[in-house]
Image 1 (tube, rainbow, N blue to C red):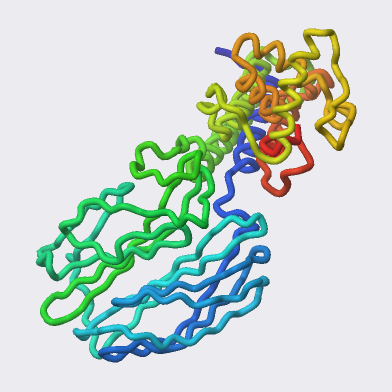
Image 2 (cartoon, rainbow, N blue to C red; image 1 turned 120 degrees about the horizontal axis):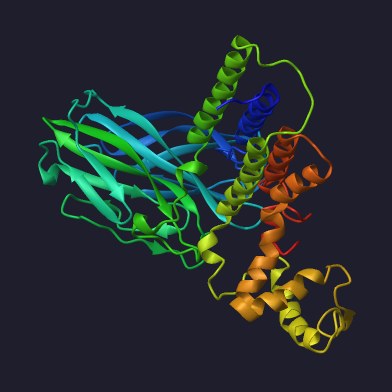
Length: 442
């Protein structure tokens, strides 16, 4: 099939623009406002005691509150009050002097976690461990025991160690409690959530576990990272299989691979074009292949944005809540009656002892919601009118570019910029992005 030089050049531009989209919209591996910590420790152990000095430093993030340090030694759990208000770059130094039995020489681990609240009063934790030796340590054999977590299930790999010489300690923070020590006979475990602390919906809480075993007169220890996941109601997901999993297309790694591959393909097409002397500059109509490809990519960008919102929850007959959304539910119900009377506004006695409705919010989304409610019911229709503006913004940006006669590549870059804005987490009150839509600022 013959492709003219202009079509080839524009197709190459589209590929490069889409590569830029993938780089711009990569999900961040860590939010900028998540606190970061560093720690330094000097630990000394005797047969019955553990002592030393630990210095914790905040290196990033905003102010945190009500911090508390939890320690899991060999046979004891200790809590130490931290700074009530902890600013970035502020160190916290504490002394350790706790009873802790060390019956055998070898390597041990002290598990610790900083529990704290953010500005929104949500609980978080930073788990870490400190390795230390008692008397003479011996390196663990290459074939050492392991434990794998799958929700509430445990899979033990004994590596020839007798069950009575093996134990697992769960270091849980900041919301759950469990049995202090588990043995190979325990194939599952139960967590009890603290009544005074609520978990975030759809949250992931990193945890640590310590595996201790005795072998040939020495003690060995290793730290195992695992995590607690919550469902959309903030309840612990015992079965990891029902945890909300993101598709591979949401992974930073695969997006980077795809971005590099598309950029490489664009470069190869350019080299081929130069080799065949088909890149002479020219002007004219873009080929149908380029135009249709642009529209498909724009639709794909909006679908990719929608995939971040748990589409399976849109059709559930439940009301969305959060931020100003709760007051909008009242508006939606009242407005349904008003539309039947030919009204688009009215007096709301429930607001500020009487207030004209829609003084600050445009009534059109509620008009659309009334008509959609005839098909899906009002709760589902309300979710659609609240979320579609943000989800469709990249596609709408592409349409705007088409109306302004922009090249396809420029339209794709515009849609990419809109997608980056919609997915930003830097603000949740000014409207436009997904977080603002969820807070009712639509």
